[in-house]
Image (cartoon, rainbow, N blue to C red; front, side, top):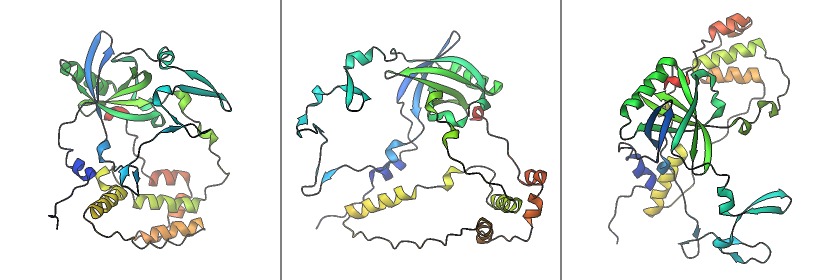
Length: 309
């Protein structure tokens, strides 16, 4: 018999590491005017908390390796004989060596070059791609706090160019509390137009609008609380892994019955309100009949500016 050992899946162990000091994933220098601010770049997310699986040969229980195969004869192609190619026509490629591609790569530079300062609320969220924390590097503490304070004071954000790993990015630097946040943005030609999304014509019924407003008000909160949400799939996966490691039998839970689908929109709204424990006695439809009444009843909170952190 083997001695029973406690088991904590890799993801579970990483959860307890959040209290440890963050480790920088890179360094750079913010340049604005004649001021140079050395910074360290940190990830805003915990990639180690993701549950990942390896590809295993079921028969032997060993990890398999990926290989590149010639589709014509099935021969394995050595990695040192592989180059990059661009398909300009069906099955026709122009080939590039590593040295040829280095010609068009962005010059190696650790600098984040600020090109302008814009009002924080003029940058649409649609352009946000990734976010990183910025921390002061050695000798940059004063300039770091100065830039953060100046951005908060002016309610502006810095738009900059950042060249790293052979690519060039457009980034936005905004205050985050007393610190700074760097957000990588999409280029304009990387954003698809909403005009490409097909929309069917239709009218908004005042009575349905009133019920929809009532439903929103019932579930309204003063602010977003991210701690109220958990990745339930990840938690269940970790539990499944622990059961496997400890030799427990895995059984599938019975599937939940799907709720009755209500086709009628008015009936669906009423059912939603009743399900949340409310009644429709307040006659929101009458209030929703007037446009001004709808706007008055639905309290609109001012948009949170990007510079607020």
